[in-house]
Length: 81
Length: 149
Image 1: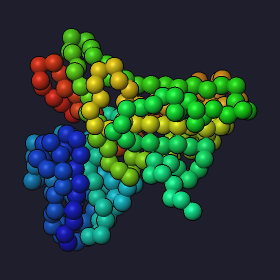
Image 2 (image 1 turned 180 degrees about the vertical axis):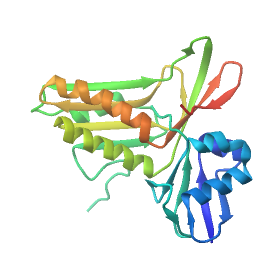
Image 3 (image 1 turned 90 degrees about the vertical axis):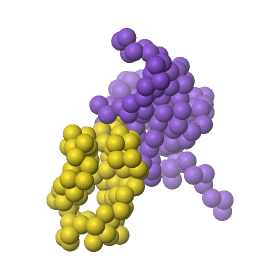
Image 4 (image 1 turned 120 degrees about the horizontal axis):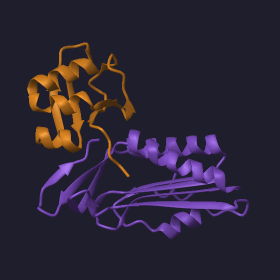
């Protein structure tokens, strides 16, 4: 399955873009997405490990399954204010 | 019926704004003003020049919207529920915020002072832990870094 993943702040900077399209084997969970990112962009592993994943604008659980229609985002530790 | 402005919540006790324009603190104070409230409080978080030996020249903010708007709305609702506040206004600025200018403003009103004096620090703590907004810091030597606490 093909998914689009939005990236922000330090993760976007480290990957070099704020959006990637990737293909994962179905069914894919947040954990599968993390594994893929860690393999493809190993230099982001430490920041990824403290980042959260949002599905359709809600913080997701690691076991949650992804679908092609979902808006998926990687949110590194926030620093608003 | 006219369309509501994009930065307004459907609840008239809450006003959430995320915008690149400078913060008009008086506008937030006016929004929370209420005849049954003896207490109004306004917090402004501003770009600080110094952190230890480091000198900051600029902060730049990025948000994941509309999730950031919804998270701010959730925090404002929860604060109203916990402390019985009358009104809450939160304004987070995006883009470049030079030294001494405000990046965040939180205003609240309540009949008595203790409620707002407890609620505003809580709102700021919540904001700093769950709202998908990030700052990038530029130092005087030209180096930049995203802040990920």
